[in-house]
Amino acid sequence: MATQDMKAVEKLGTAEAFRSTADLGEAGNVWGEDYTNLSPKEERRLVRRIDFRLIPIMALLYLMSFLDRINIGQARLDGLQEDLNLSSRQFQNCLVVFFALQVAFETLTNHVVKRFRPSRTIPVMMLIWGIIMTCMGLVKTYEQLLATRVLLGLAECGLFPAVIFCMTCWYKREEVTLRIGILFSGATAAGAFGGILAYGIGRMGGTAGKGGWAWIFIIEGIITVLIAAASFWLVHDLPAEARFLNERERAFVLKRLRTDQGTAANERFTWDQVRSALLDYKTYFLSAIYFCVGLGFYALAIFTPTIISSLGSWTRPQSQLLSVPPYVLAVITTVVTAFYADRTGRRAVVIIFWTTISCIGFIILLAVPVSKPGPRYFSLFLAVSGIAPAAVATLAWSGGSFAPVYKRATSMGIIMSVGNAAGIVSSFLYPQTDAPRYVAGHATCLALAVLGAILAGVLGLLLRHENAKRDRLLSDSKEGEVEDDVMLGDASLRFRYLV
Image (cartoon, rainbow, N blue to C red; front, top):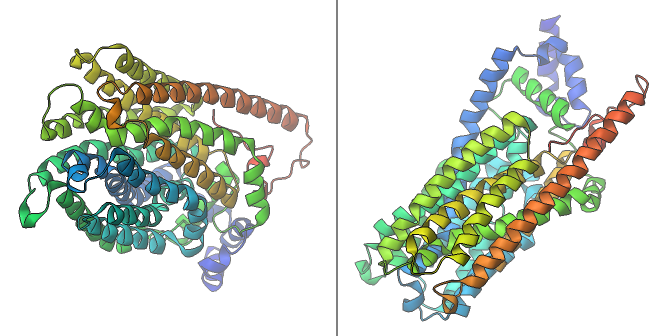
């Protein structure tokens, strides 16, 4: 019987076996019940293999993405603003246009990635933005810098939502926070690695008649292009098309996703799913939370070197190196928090705790005079290491709160677009005219962190109430009355939110 089942599978082919949302059930009938079951040991081994194939390359891609996104802050310390005769407003404009393009196109990119496959779209995006980043080192005027930042924002806008979306299409909800935490630690590592790299590359200033800032863009752009070329062989597709899975493993991965998330991998696109995402209050709650934590994260990522330079009479290289330790701590808090959140299933409490830590950091920055650089520098450790894990928990909460897959793609695109809108606002928070205290910037980050904690608490209570309501309805229902349809997604009575 097993041999006949396997022949039936081979005859159908993988694409046919998973053509529609009902295909998982059909595939189970074709393969037989035992074919889609793995022992716990086999499951753990499979998940580790998926981790090995997905996590390292995705983390590296996101590290390079965020490094290329924030290196303009390091370039500013290395003479960018002076060499191009940029006013504070012109420098802010160069920051704003990058995030504006991301806000405009991020919602669309998840659908593009799902339609044309991650193994094609992600490497192409990275190759294009690496070339643009290299060209940024050749600009000579404000207009040229502004144009390259526009193109960079357009080329890079799809990577982060695509990476997070792919993670939610591979892992169960209690597994995904740790993986997103590791990926997001790439962003926090960019803050640390970027300072060290900028320090080293900046010493090339004067080579070939170019300033240190130009070499930061050129070298990091070339590195990005090389990694992009390799990623054509290293980035994998979603489970239904991933080549490193055999048919039994593919069936099992899709089955566990359907059981956990109420979703299958090859669902057909429908406008009903888009409309459902647009009408779901969770989309807007999580968008607002991500905006609140994203504001502090982006502001600190771009302006930490500037803030540090105002704490004392540091040289530019010293300011770059002093920006490293807070982000090293942030990597640690991000990964540890992600591990805890996956083990416990908690989301709201994690966000509330870490935004509170970040708030303490901003309060110290506001309260302690500039004559005491020690406590002010310590406050950056609290602010940075608190806001990063809060952002990770928000993204993981978002990925696990929406189904089916195209509803999730739409909602997460909106959430990340709103989060990048925070990047636009953050561009205006730390003008040089506010040095050395930067009261407006610190106060804004503090206020938004408090609001984010409040919103997380409210959403947690709402989803806890929804879970309890579904428990009651399910217990009152007779066997067979509750519809178990994959297209119901998070509307199914069997779906439970992680809070």
